[in-house]
Image (cartoon, rainbow, N blue to C red; front, side, top):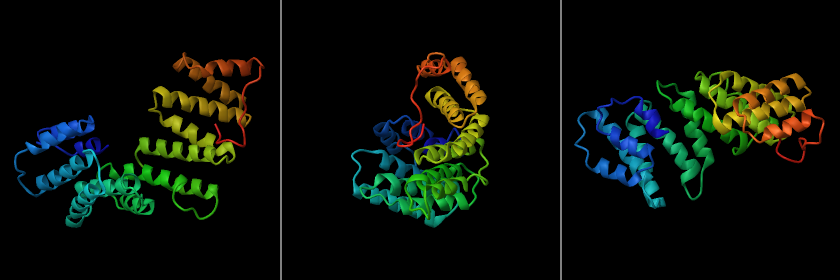
Length: 268
């Protein structure tokens, strides 16, 4: 994620590009060697990018201790303090959020949400706001304290949709909302609407693509829309002919017993 989002703003001739490629390929030791061999950075922008690269490479090394996390956090906060909303500062804020959410021995999801919310609410000409929007949606759906019940959690995710512009982000927000509705066993019609909207935006393939077709077909069956269910079952057959779930669908269409949605479990 870091290499992809930041790499789009860097020249192919930038000396750190090979370091980012190694980071993106999970070659942490090789990335450290590449970084150590870099020439001195020339100019403020190059030094900021180099400082951020140093923090990421340091974070990527094993074993990861709390002391190392403290050092990386200091580096990233210094980048934010110097310039709060350029691409490097926004990348640093996103990584600070991820560190608070996942890296610490005692995660601070409230702090993570603050970093992500700040990126969502403060515009920037980069992908970090989009990436933060998805992370914030997941926290709202499952982790952060909610004012109200499960439906309030779903509503908090849905509130992130209107301002989302990137079609991939819109699609994934629909998917997060749908999964939360199914997880909390809320009425399935809303989950169906979100997944149909996600499907209209496209872009999924492999296991995720097949799963989404099955989920839409099953939710359509649950809500009594047999025509929609059949359409998605046939798409599954056409696009993923070896998927073993086709057998269950054929059994259902033949009138044979198949598993039903259980109110005691987490949806479909």
